[in-house]
Image (cartoon, rainbow, N blue to C red; front, top):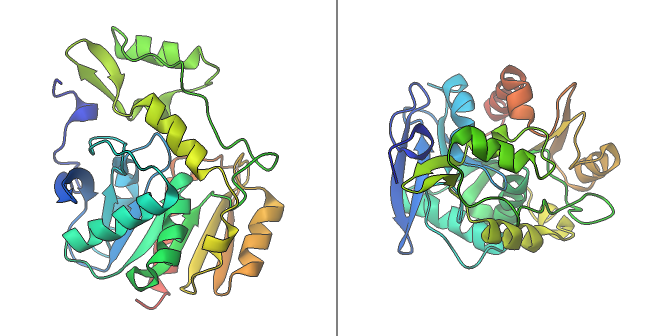
Length: 279
């Protein structure tokens, strides 16, 4: 693989660096903002990468150390066979252990939000605070459409623009989010994730995850995008009401990728919640 910007691990300016650590024999790539402050473990959603949290890491620089791994089967991390929520959560716990970290605040967006609250349920001693961005506990039909069919997406394209066009030809209005995981290989441009793995992972998360959400007792912030296709207003209110010590915040005018639609508001919400939450 060539050293295209999408596939290269190295400095990300004030956001820190992309690094690697071995967990159970598998190489995990991660963004590390380093510096002082308590740790915030940030978990991306399906098809994503840890580096989506680079703007948040810059905003929190000097206050919190942001660690954002490419989760199993994503980005520059090694592939994995087990793509269940429990496997993701257990790996997140082992990732912290590999870096010598006992516990952290945990933030997750979309699928990463589910991993975050499954982690809090399975390893409550590892999670000081829980922040979930636009993720439902009712990740099944008819509440939401839990699976984006990527099975027909191209393996390679001659250019990055051609890869964008080929993905958008499958009904994706804007492929920018997915192209964060694009890289130039010896035989053309492709995605760092395997589409079969993404299909298996999405199906594994397509369930009622309510029991995991209500199992932990640490302080929690639930963030909902006004124009979310993932978290309905009713389900958001129900989630906040059924889990003690949970705040609900809505982001006006934002879609599912609220951290991108309102980066300043997102950073303010995350940082403000962490500032007032005992470590």
